[in-house]
Image (cartoon, rainbow, N blue to C red; front, side, top):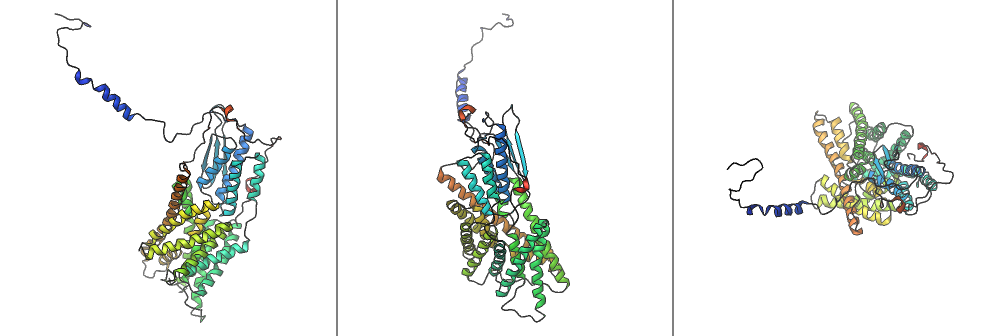
Length: 523
């Protein structure tokens, strides 16, 4: 029989189809297993609806938030804190679609007003940076007040300007004396005698005044570091020169410890902790800029010391390196020196009285942890320092939160006694004065060890702070702080939001304040 196209055949036996009956069930089970059960855990911020804020008020709010952000990063705040501050202010005044971008030298805020309105984008440059933790705490307090009880924007600007232009809590002479006390404590910590401690104190006061004058004269920070490092090295060389001349001293004299204490003074102002904190928070551009600044300024210290050491070697007055790294075996004396160093740096950074006390206690406790790690646990220098820094960061974050003080002020001051000042000087001296010509082979590993110790300190403080933040978030039943981004409106209907954002004065006149009139000045 012939079959045409489209005509079914009836003379074939049907094939069993029982083998395919389980396929639909298997396919359905696979779909149920692979199909997501809910929305993504971290939603991508998107703009949903206008927030009902007029453009004039929005411009004023963004200007206020920008001023606050620039002031905070200029006084030593981390990039994550600056971002959170700007978003907190803008959200308090009803602005929802705000994005913030913070670098080490600028702050950018963009306000997305919707597909049918022009966005508002503003960028401000951070012209200078100075450690001023009292002003930083006052700024944070003002931000908290404005977020809880918003006031008209022009009134908020007046309150902001009053905080920025407020005088420092300490007089200039007290800050200078604190710098000398820091160097004296560092000298005593590494085994200096009474005479060298006195010389270190006097030299550090001179260095502080010279750096202030150079900063006011507009000299670049690199060259200021060179001069600051050359002064204690020159003083140590003069001590060496005076010995053959018959000048006697009280007790043992180690001129190299004058240089080591001066290096600790210069290293204390570098933002090592801030760089590590920004890196852990995901602000890699800002962290890279801070880290590069630390490298450049550290190179300035090396150049200043190298020039003087080379000159001393040519004149046949080399400075001998002391082999003593700790002050005898008296841990109590070491802890007291560490406490003095931390207190002195906190005063130099204009921390509040409570923060100064907490920083001193944290510095002493950190040195106790370091001594236990090195002597009892037999840990290496880098591991022991990182462990001490981790304990400092963890405890400082919890205590500072309870006392409402800046944790950055406490942690930065508390790790200053742990800075590798003598190790850095030893490496530089080996590069310059090694008589056998192998200075590079010997000095570079020493400098790398000092660099690794600094990284260990930064990582330890940052990890301790991070773990403390996780503990606080868990105790409050909230998720840890997410990455910075736009804040989302809570209601897509702008009429239903009932925005109570304060508006400007009836004149609608925005007072213009120039960038260089915010009142921040280097100490």
